[in-house]
Length: 173
Image (cartoon, rainbow, N blue to C red; front, side):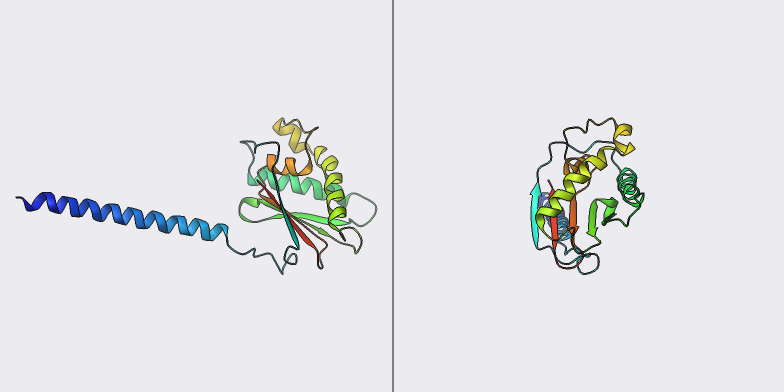
């Protein structure tokens, strides 16, 4: 009879150790997934030559979904295709739940410097505000930048590249 409490303690300790080891394994898996290399480098764009973090002034709206992100980017892409001239860039989403935006310049001049990339982003702010997705979700967009609008819809980052040598990554915090 005195052996039974000892066995319960051993059993309890064994269960606790298994839970701890499993939890540590899960944490390691999450960290490994977050630190995984960017699988689009070398396919859609060269490795980033510069990076920055952006702290948006907004939070993601609860109704943001993969579908709303795709609709937003599709709306922007259609705006560029309605012009009478070839579009200077392409914009598309990738990744799990379409949380990554990639903008690729299509000519040799447009995205040749980081300053020109930022100027394009400023121009995209006005274009993005005109899409129907923001009136549908009821967001006040007049004081937001393009990066704020991306965060509002649940995007995680933006890659902007000249498609040859220059790539800039912006992580939305």
